[in-house]
Image (tube, rainbow, N blue to C red; front, side, top):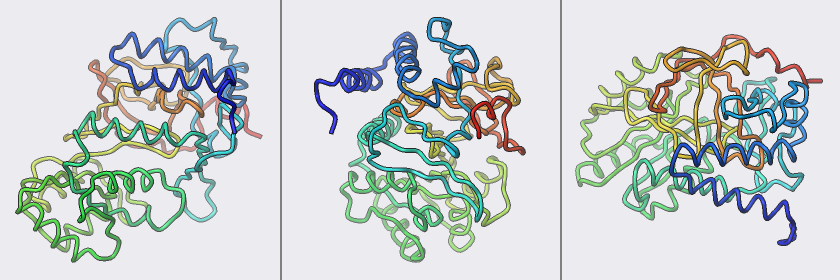
Length: 338
C-alpha cells in the first residue's frame, strides 16, 4: 500500500490530473517534459536507455528530442516507473514460441480514464450506444487490453443487448439488423478477419451503425491493405465509411479513425514519423517512416515509444498506418538487451 504522504505518489497523482486536462499544444509540451523527467528518474530501464544515449532532461529543449524507447523492451524487461505490484498485466498475442510483450499496469484507473475520455471525446456519451463486439482471437486468450476496454464499454453502455459475440454470429446478424432498423445507435467493433468472415456469410444495409475494425488478420486470413479491407467491409455492411481503432498492448491510449484510414489522437497522445533504422531521428510530416508515439497516459510505464509500425503524419496531428517493418530489430534496441 502506498502512503498518501509519499512524495512520489503525490507527484504521480499531480501528473495524472494534468494529463487529462490538456487543452493546447503548449500544455501538452509542458506535461510531456514533466512526464519525461519523472520517468527518467524512476523508470530504471528507460533511465539506462537514456544514459547510454547521453540524453539527460537538462539536454532536452523540444519534445521531439526526448528519446523514444524501442517497443521490443516490453518483451525482455519490466518497463515500469514504480516498483509496485501491478493491478493487471496486459500481454500481446503471438504465435507458438514467439516472445510476447508484457505491460505491467500499476494503476489501471489511468487506463480506464484514458479510454473512457477518448471515447467521449470522439463519439460522445457511451450510454447512447449499443456496443456489439466480434473479437474472437482476443476473447480466446488471457491478458488482452482491448478486451478489458471493450468489456468496460459494454458495461457502461447500460444497454441490455450490448455484448460479445464469439460463435453466435447468427444472433449477431439478427440483432444488428433489428437495432439498426429501430434507429438505435450501434457500434460494432471487430477484428478484421472476423468482420470479413461475417460479411461473407451475411449482407446488410445499415444506416445507424458504426463499423469499427481493430486491424489484424491474426494469421487467419491473407493480409490486406486498409483501402481494400474497407472497400469489402463497406460493401458487406452497406455503409459509406469504416471506422478504425489504433492501439497496442504497450500503450494505454487509442487513436481513432472515422474513415479513410486517417487517425486522430486524444489530447494526451501524439504520433511522429521517424527514420525506420533510427528511433532517434524524426522525419518531417508527410514522409513515410517508423511510428513513434508519445502516450502520456503511460505514466507508470514509458510514455515515449518507438513502435514497429510504418506510418505517415500530417501537419494537423493526424496520421496514417501503412504497415509494419519486415524485420524485428531497430538499431539501438540492443543497447540493453541481454
